[in-house]
Image (cartoon, rainbow, N blue to C red; front, side, top):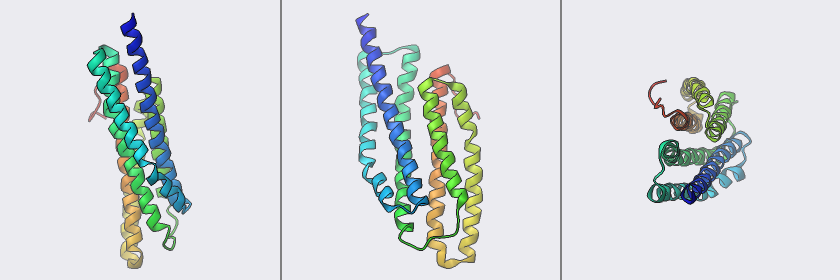
Length: 219
């Protein structure tokens, strides 16, 4: 039927837009961590300059969702898909915001003497990026099992955050002259920890979309 054909086309367009938003958020996170790891101020500024484009993609997803709700009145699986995307878009935008905050920290840190090796922080960034990529893949494939596997990795992020927190607090006490830089790195770690939480939210929405199962607060 003509109505179903239009709905399918609009759902495909919505899927494409939210995946583009997810890809941009993932790229922002990778570039932000690159700017910190490689002391690359240009990469950090690129993340910040691109943030408005990501905001506009979120607005576009919201518009598409509203149009589908208002004009097509989707039911069952299609309804769950649109509801999940509507909730997912602001989560992806917040991940991009955290990437921007990491980029701002990198701009400040890269103009100052380099601190000691912080391999755990870089490891945390790699896991966060991997989780986000896995979450987007699970969403694309409507794969609840894969989404659940990504959720399990949030424990790795939390463990690393706790280790980094204690390390940096100890360094602040031992070397007060580096306290400001240590504090900036601590904020970076917190941003990565929050990204892990947001990726978990995305995976929970994928499980809901695929299985009509609400698992929030249950794992």
